[in-house]
Length: 106
Image (cartoon, rainbow, N blue to C red; front, side, top):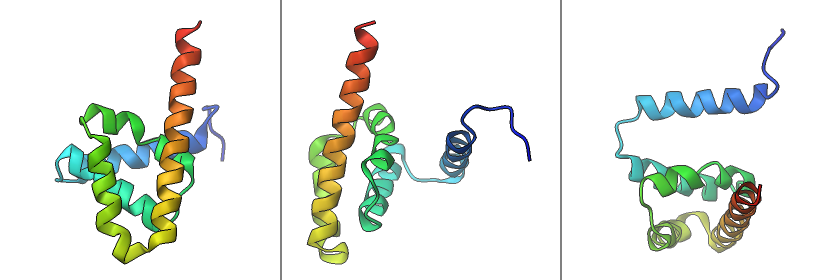
């Protein structure tokens, strides 16, 4: 199997995400909050959260809304997963800021 793309894995993930969004009837902000809850439930790494920062900004999500989701899922997924999610979200925000700053410095 040959591919002409230099980033076939990322391209595949992007296509899967786009297909999912197009097939979902949830409002965009609810969709992103739901995805963040799912990421927390599976103890996803910071990079997975990084992919949701731009969509979260575009839907005008607030830090308080993200915090509310973590509070809401804590009794289900547990303290360790919620604390891990908070750490990974913070790391992802740091990565996003670093990328934005490096792009604006050029």
